[in-house]
Length: 251
Image 1 (cartoon, rainbow, N blue to C red):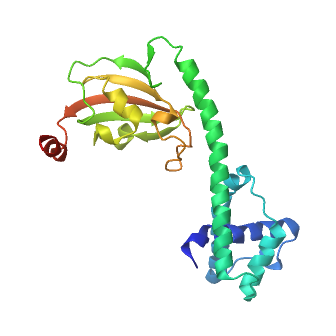
Image 2 (image 1 turned 180 degrees about the horizontal axis):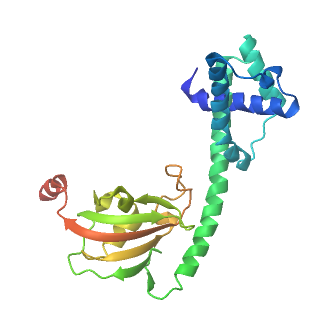
Image 3 (image 1 turned 30 degrees about the horizontal axis):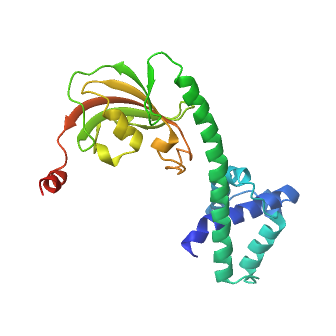
């Protein structure tokens, strides 16, 4: 089976099982599981159902409604070797369906995240101690540092925690138990701008608008499109720029 078809094929199987159970159960569904093979067969069906259950919400949010009777018919015809569509047709149709689901899901989640982010930024900007840069980056000094400030070309060592506006943590060096080191010019714009405001030893809280973060992209299944991100950052050390960058500068 084409690898791109597998998630949707699994979804189709589970939808067929779900739809059938809502009408009348197969006689075998009342059968007591006794042999290992029977349990394996049931486990396979159960795993498919669990897989789809975790993904059906996204399809419903995307308002992609499929005729369940046709889903059942397609499943049964395939088992019987009587497909009404060629593999090429099925591939194209399923790829188009997946694209539609992903696009509509992106629109729904992105619209919600943008609205929540804007409201959060407006309220946060009113708080004492919060400053807003020309780009729209918001920052608050939790602890002032006394060391060097990084330039865009430097490597920095930081501890940080990133959350969505609802407080959900999506990334944390604290949870991993060790700080992170990276070139400052290779991260999201909000980080590149914000950390240059800090000195070594400082701890800041940043509220980063979507346009200074990941924009309309969904990241890792954790960060919806158009998300405003909140980061608490400790600048531990400013290191020299990478050797490759130094060589290019000297040339």
